Length: 251
Image 1 (tube, rainbow, N blue to C red):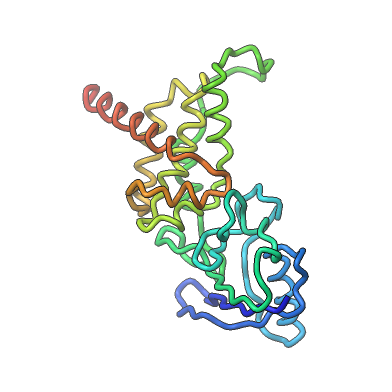
Image 2 (tube, rainbow, N blue to C red):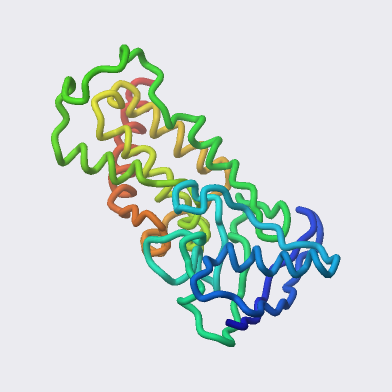
C-alpha cells in the first residue's frame, strides 16, 4: 500500500505546530497503524530526518497510550478499538490520512502526537480509590454483590483512561471518564463509605482542570474504545447532586 500522511508536527509545547506531508510506501495491509508509523520513521531515520513522535506502550488495546486522532476521529472510525488495534487493511491504496494529537486544552501537546494527560491522574488522585480499611483479601464470594451491580462495576472499570471521550467532545468534557471511575467504585460495597466524598472531590478536580461540560450528544460513547456507556454520566450526576445536598445540610 502507498499512502499520503498529513501529520501534525510540533517540536515543543510552546512551539508553533504545523501539518507535514509524508509518503508511506510499501506498507503491508496486515500492519497496524502504529507499525505503519514505525515504517515511516525508519525511512526518516535513514534520511537523517527527525522521526514522528507518538505515544504507545502495550499495543494490545489495554493501556490507552496510543492517543491519536485519525482523519479527525479519536482512534479512527472503527468502533470499540484503540489506535494500536487499527490495521492498514481498513484503508485503501492511495488514501490520504490525517494524523493529529488529541485536541483539548487540558491535554497540552508535549511533542508532535504526544499530549500530557496527567489531568486524568490528578482526578484519580482526588478520589478514585478506597482508603477505608477493608481488611485483607477474601474469597471472591465472601461479600455478596448483586449481579447487576457486579456487571455494571465491571463495565465501568473497563475504562482505560485514554482520553478519546475528551477529544471527541466539542466541549472537551471528561464526564464519561470521571463517571466510569465513580460508577466503578459506587457499585461495590467497598466503595460505599466514601461515595459522596469521592464524587465531590473528583468532579471538582475535573472542573478545576478545565474540562468542559457535557452536552449529551454522546460523541464520547461513540469514540470510547471500551464502549463505556453514558448511563454512567447520569448515575454520577445523581450522586453528585445528592452529595451537594448532604454537604449543604451538614454545613
